Image (cartoon, rainbow, N blue to C red):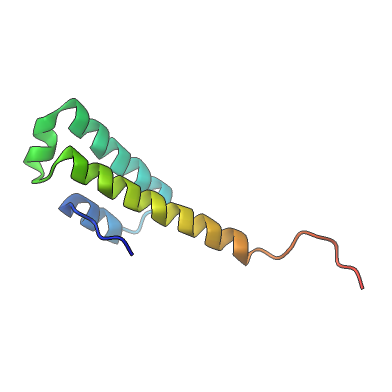
Length: 80
């Protein structure tokens, strides 16, 4: 598993939230850091750190989606 660089992401990761919500929150954090550099500094990180963590959540989301698809039974008709 990829490691988070920010405390914000580490805390978000432990929350009982859907992965989609975590991706949105990480994207919001990154957006705020780009618009206001003081946001990242106030949280002890950089915009690059927040971008890194956003992509970690995206990778987790992709993995969960792939796992869900592979767990579904085949939709092909059963023939004998």
